Image (cartoon, rainbow, N blue to C red; front, side, top):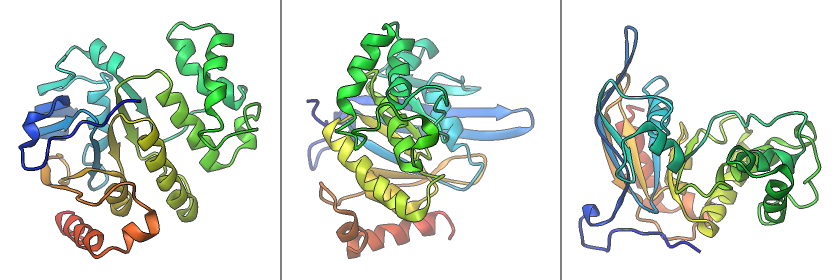
Length: 264
Protein backbone atom coordinates (compact mmCIF):
# COMPACT_ATOMS: atom_id res chain seq x y z
CA UNK A 1 0.00 0.00 0.00
CA UNK A 2 1.23 3.48 -0.86
CA UNK A 3 2.26 5.86 1.87
CA UNK A 4 1.06 9.43 2.09
CA UNK A 5 4.04 11.77 1.82
CA UNK A 6 3.92 15.06 3.70
CA UNK A 7 6.49 17.58 4.77
CA UNK A 8 7.74 16.72 8.27
CA UNK A 9 6.45 18.93 11.10
CA UNK A 10 8.40 22.14 11.39
CA UNK A 11 9.85 21.92 7.87
CA UNK A 12 8.61 23.97 4.90
CA UNK A 13 6.23 22.21 2.52
CA UNK A 14 8.73 22.70 -0.30
CA UNK A 15 10.82 19.82 1.10
CA UNK A 16 8.11 17.39 -0.07
CA UNK A 17 7.84 16.37 -3.72
CA UNK A 18 5.39 18.36 -5.84
CA UNK A 19 2.83 16.17 -7.62
CA UNK A 20 1.08 19.13 -9.29
CA UNK A 21 2.24 22.68 -9.85
CA UNK A 22 0.55 25.67 -11.50
CA UNK A 23 2.63 28.82 -11.85
CA UNK A 24 1.16 32.16 -12.92
CA UNK A 25 -1.63 30.42 -14.82
CA UNK A 26 -4.07 32.43 -16.90
CA UNK A 27 -6.97 31.08 -18.94
CA UNK A 28 -9.36 33.10 -21.08
CA UNK A 29 -12.49 32.08 -22.97
CA UNK A 30 -13.27 34.80 -25.53
CA UNK A 31 -14.03 37.89 -23.40
CA UNK A 32 -14.11 35.96 -20.11
CA UNK A 33 -10.92 35.71 -18.04
CA UNK A 34 -11.48 32.55 -15.99
CA UNK A 35 -8.10 32.39 -14.21
CA UNK A 36 -5.46 35.06 -13.83
CA UNK A 37 -2.01 34.65 -12.29
CA UNK A 38 -2.99 31.54 -10.34
CA UNK A 39 -0.14 29.69 -8.63
CA UNK A 40 -0.68 26.47 -6.73
CA UNK A 41 1.39 23.51 -5.54
CA UNK A 42 0.11 20.13 -4.39
CA UNK A 43 2.52 17.70 -2.73
CA UNK A 44 2.60 13.96 -3.29
CA UNK A 45 -0.02 12.22 -1.14
CA UNK A 46 -1.73 15.48 -0.17
CA UNK A 47 -5.49 15.94 -0.28
CA UNK A 48 -6.19 19.51 -1.38
CA UNK A 49 -9.68 21.02 -1.51
CA UNK A 50 -10.42 24.06 -3.68
CA UNK A 51 -13.42 26.24 -2.83
CA UNK A 52 -14.65 29.43 -4.40
CA UNK A 53 -17.68 31.19 -5.90
CA UNK A 54 -19.47 29.82 -8.94
CA UNK A 55 -17.70 30.72 -12.16
CA UNK A 56 -14.30 31.38 -10.56
CA UNK A 57 -12.48 28.77 -12.65
CA UNK A 58 -12.41 25.77 -10.31
CA UNK A 59 -13.40 23.25 -13.00
CA UNK A 60 -11.06 24.95 -15.46
CA UNK A 61 -8.22 24.45 -12.97
CA UNK A 62 -8.92 20.70 -12.89
CA UNK A 63 -9.14 20.43 -16.67
CA UNK A 64 -5.81 22.25 -17.00
CA UNK A 65 -4.22 19.83 -14.54
CA UNK A 66 -5.72 16.86 -16.39
CA UNK A 67 -4.28 17.97 -19.72
CA UNK A 68 -7.73 18.62 -21.20
CA UNK A 69 -6.92 22.32 -21.64
CA UNK A 70 -3.77 24.41 -22.01
CA UNK A 71 -3.15 27.70 -20.19
CA UNK A 72 -2.94 30.98 -22.09
CA UNK A 73 -0.25 32.13 -19.65
CA UNK A 74 1.96 30.45 -17.08
CA UNK A 75 2.65 26.72 -16.78
CA UNK A 76 1.04 23.53 -15.47
CA UNK A 77 3.05 20.43 -14.61
CA UNK A 78 2.28 17.03 -13.08
CA UNK A 79 5.23 15.15 -11.63
CA UNK A 80 7.48 17.81 -13.16
CA UNK A 81 6.14 17.21 -16.71
CA UNK A 82 4.28 20.02 -18.49
CA UNK A 83 3.28 18.21 -21.71
CA UNK A 84 -0.52 17.77 -21.94
CA UNK A 85 -0.17 14.09 -22.87
CA UNK A 86 2.04 13.45 -19.84
CA UNK A 87 -0.49 15.20 -17.60
CA UNK A 88 -3.30 13.04 -18.97
CA UNK A 89 -1.28 9.89 -18.29
CA UNK A 90 -0.73 10.85 -14.64
CA UNK A 91 -4.15 12.27 -13.74
CA UNK A 92 -7.55 10.61 -13.35
CA UNK A 93 -10.40 13.12 -13.69
CA UNK A 94 -13.87 12.56 -12.20
CA UNK A 95 -16.37 15.15 -13.50
CA UNK A 96 -19.46 16.37 -11.68
CA UNK A 97 -21.80 13.88 -13.39
CA UNK A 98 -21.10 10.17 -12.96
CA UNK A 99 -21.42 9.59 -16.76
CA UNK A 100 -22.16 5.88 -16.31
CA UNK A 101 -23.14 4.16 -19.55
CA UNK A 102 -26.79 3.09 -19.10
CA UNK A 103 -26.40 -0.14 -21.13
CA UNK A 104 -23.41 -1.39 -19.09
CA UNK A 105 -23.75 -3.01 -15.69
CA UNK A 106 -21.92 -1.58 -12.68
CA UNK A 107 -18.78 -3.70 -13.02
CA UNK A 108 -18.68 -3.00 -16.75
CA UNK A 109 -18.81 0.75 -16.07
CA UNK A 110 -16.05 0.50 -13.49
CA UNK A 111 -13.92 -1.60 -15.84
CA UNK A 112 -14.27 0.87 -18.71
CA UNK A 113 -11.22 2.87 -17.64
CA UNK A 114 -9.07 -0.26 -17.86
CA UNK A 115 -10.50 -1.13 -21.27
CA UNK A 116 -9.52 2.34 -22.45
CA UNK A 117 -5.97 1.47 -21.42
CA UNK A 118 -6.05 -1.53 -23.73
CA UNK A 119 -7.16 -4.39 -21.47
CA UNK A 120 -9.66 -6.88 -22.82
CA UNK A 121 -13.18 -6.67 -21.43
CA UNK A 122 -12.97 -9.94 -19.50
CA UNK A 123 -9.64 -9.05 -17.86
CA UNK A 124 -10.83 -5.53 -17.03
CA UNK A 125 -14.01 -6.86 -15.39
CA UNK A 126 -11.91 -9.43 -13.52
CA UNK A 127 -9.83 -6.66 -12.00
CA UNK A 128 -12.79 -4.46 -11.12
CA UNK A 129 -15.14 -7.06 -9.61
CA UNK A 130 -13.08 -7.96 -6.50
CA UNK A 131 -13.12 -4.31 -5.40
CA UNK A 132 -16.90 -4.05 -5.25
CA UNK A 133 -17.12 -5.36 -1.69
CA UNK A 134 -14.46 -2.90 -0.46
CA UNK A 135 -16.38 -0.05 -2.08
CA UNK A 136 -19.70 -1.02 -0.52
CA UNK A 137 -21.11 -2.37 -3.77
CA UNK A 138 -21.18 -6.11 -3.08
CA UNK A 139 -24.01 -7.90 -4.93
CA UNK A 140 -24.53 -4.91 -7.26
CA UNK A 141 -21.92 -5.91 -9.83
CA UNK A 142 -24.55 -6.80 -12.46
CA UNK A 143 -26.93 -3.92 -11.68
CA UNK A 144 -27.55 -1.32 -14.38
CA UNK A 145 -27.04 2.36 -13.48
CA UNK A 146 -30.80 2.95 -13.39
CA UNK A 147 -31.05 0.34 -10.64
CA UNK A 148 -28.47 2.06 -8.41
CA UNK A 149 -28.97 4.85 -5.88
CA UNK A 150 -27.17 8.16 -6.39
CA UNK A 151 -24.56 7.26 -3.79
CA UNK A 152 -23.91 3.88 -5.41
CA UNK A 153 -23.51 5.48 -8.82
CA UNK A 154 -20.91 7.84 -7.39
CA UNK A 155 -19.04 4.91 -5.85
CA UNK A 156 -18.94 3.15 -9.21
CA UNK A 157 -17.70 6.37 -10.83
CA UNK A 158 -15.00 6.77 -8.19
CA UNK A 159 -13.90 3.15 -8.59
CA UNK A 160 -13.67 3.73 -12.36
CA UNK A 161 -11.49 6.78 -11.64
CA UNK A 162 -9.26 4.87 -9.22
CA UNK A 163 -8.73 1.64 -11.20
CA UNK A 164 -6.14 2.87 -13.75
CA UNK A 165 -3.76 3.55 -10.85
CA UNK A 166 -2.88 7.10 -11.85
CA UNK A 167 -1.12 8.98 -9.05
CA UNK A 168 -3.24 12.17 -9.12
CA UNK A 169 -7.03 12.19 -8.68
CA UNK A 170 -8.99 15.26 -9.77
CA UNK A 171 -12.52 15.31 -8.33
CA UNK A 172 -14.98 17.94 -9.56
CA UNK A 173 -17.88 18.35 -7.11
CA UNK A 174 -18.23 14.56 -6.77
CA UNK A 175 -21.29 14.72 -4.47
CA UNK A 176 -23.02 17.88 -5.69
CA UNK A 177 -26.04 16.01 -7.07
CA UNK A 178 -26.77 14.10 -3.85
CA UNK A 179 -29.16 14.98 -1.04
CA UNK A 180 -27.62 16.25 2.20
CA UNK A 181 -27.84 12.97 4.14
CA UNK A 182 -26.38 10.90 1.30
CA UNK A 183 -23.72 13.52 0.75
CA UNK A 184 -22.60 13.37 4.39
CA UNK A 185 -22.45 9.59 4.21
CA UNK A 186 -20.45 9.72 0.98
CA UNK A 187 -17.97 12.16 2.48
CA UNK A 188 -17.20 9.65 5.24
CA UNK A 189 -16.99 6.87 2.67
CA UNK A 190 -14.57 8.85 0.48
CA UNK A 191 -12.35 9.66 3.46
CA UNK A 192 -12.13 5.93 4.24
CA UNK A 193 -11.53 5.05 0.58
CA UNK A 194 -8.64 7.53 0.33
CA UNK A 195 -7.15 6.16 3.55
CA UNK A 196 -7.20 2.67 2.02
CA UNK A 197 -5.95 3.82 -1.41
CA UNK A 198 -3.80 6.93 -0.78
CA UNK A 199 -3.31 9.22 -3.77
CA UNK A 200 -2.63 12.86 -4.42
CA UNK A 201 -6.09 14.44 -4.62
CA UNK A 202 -7.42 17.81 -5.76
CA UNK A 203 -11.13 18.08 -4.96
CA UNK A 204 -13.26 21.03 -6.06
CA UNK A 205 -16.34 21.72 -3.96
CA UNK A 206 -18.79 24.47 -3.02
CA UNK A 207 -19.27 22.86 0.39
CA UNK A 208 -16.87 24.33 2.97
CA UNK A 209 -17.59 21.57 5.50
CA UNK A 210 -16.87 18.94 2.87
CA UNK A 211 -13.58 20.64 2.01
CA UNK A 212 -12.46 20.83 5.63
CA UNK A 213 -13.51 17.28 6.45
CA UNK A 214 -11.73 15.67 3.50
CA UNK A 215 -8.65 17.82 2.99
CA UNK A 216 -5.17 18.26 4.42
CA UNK A 217 -5.20 21.82 3.04
CA UNK A 218 -7.86 24.16 1.67
CA UNK A 219 -7.36 26.82 -1.00
CA UNK A 220 -9.94 29.60 -1.47
CA UNK A 221 -10.28 31.25 -4.88
CA UNK A 222 -11.58 34.74 -5.56
CA UNK A 223 -14.46 35.63 -7.82
CA UNK A 224 -13.65 35.48 -11.53
CA UNK A 225 -10.93 35.74 -12.61
CA UNK A 226 -9.88 33.11 -10.10
CA UNK A 227 -6.85 33.80 -7.93
CA UNK A 228 -5.76 32.25 -4.65
CA UNK A 229 -6.90 34.57 -1.85
CA UNK A 230 -6.42 32.27 1.14
CA UNK A 231 -5.00 28.87 1.96
CA UNK A 232 -4.64 27.05 5.24
CA UNK A 233 -3.67 23.66 6.60
CA UNK A 234 -6.40 21.55 8.22
CA UNK A 235 -4.63 20.42 11.38
CA UNK A 236 -7.22 17.88 12.45
CA UNK A 237 -6.22 14.30 13.30
CA UNK A 238 -6.92 11.37 11.00
CA UNK A 239 -8.89 9.17 10.76
CA UNK A 240 -11.75 11.65 11.05
CA UNK A 241 -15.17 10.58 12.29
CA UNK A 242 -17.54 13.04 10.65
CA UNK A 243 -19.83 13.84 13.58
CA UNK A 244 -16.96 14.40 16.01
CA UNK A 245 -14.95 16.37 13.45
CA UNK A 246 -17.62 18.84 12.35
CA UNK A 247 -18.57 19.61 15.97
CA UNK A 248 -14.97 20.22 17.06
CA UNK A 249 -14.26 23.89 17.97
CA UNK A 250 -11.12 23.82 15.80
CA UNK A 251 -13.26 22.77 12.84
CA UNK A 252 -15.69 25.61 13.55
CA UNK A 253 -12.80 28.10 13.61
CA UNK A 254 -11.49 26.86 10.26
CA UNK A 255 -14.98 27.02 8.77
CA UNK A 256 -15.38 30.62 9.93
CA UNK A 257 -12.02 31.50 8.38
CA UNK A 258 -12.97 29.91 5.07
CA UNK A 259 -16.37 31.63 4.98
CA UNK A 260 -14.74 34.97 5.72
CA UNK A 261 -12.32 34.45 2.82
CA UNK A 262 -15.32 33.68 0.60
CA UNK A 263 -17.04 36.87 1.73
CA UNK A 264 -19.90 34.99 3.38
